[in-house]
Amino acid sequence: MAAERPSLKYSRLPKDDESDAQRTSVRQRFPEPEESNVPDLRFTYTLPETVPWKSIFLALFLLTFGTLTLLLAYLIGTGHMGGDREQVIGFTILGILLFLPGFYETRIAYYAWRGAKGYKFSSIPVY
Image (cartoon, rainbow, N blue to C red; front, side):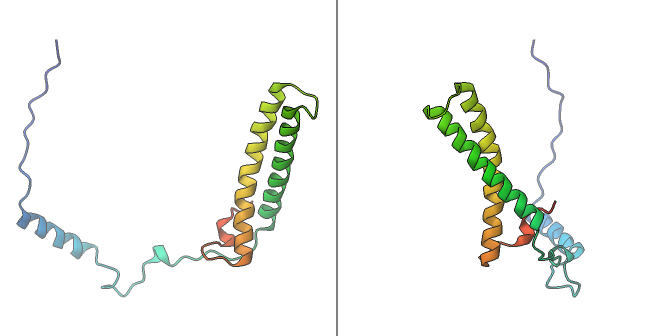
């Protein structure tokens, strides 16, 4: 037997006139930024532009060892080095986990150093 729905009483939607009155009351409570003289502090915070050297060296470390690990997986997989198929899978997964974050942060650091639009050193996490 299907469960019965409780009887619900629905109210009518407000007419256009009522929604306009509600909109004006909301506008009065939360004025637009142009109307008030106080600056909106959500958009005035600036991050310091220091170069995070530790993070850049960590990114270069991850990029280097990720590349070497992927190269090792390739050499084992093609038979140039001795090893099993399980080692290829392990080295490939480890290489991807090392390479991707290293490449990402190194790319951000390089573009920030070059002064490309939209790239800043403050986008790199500081460790």
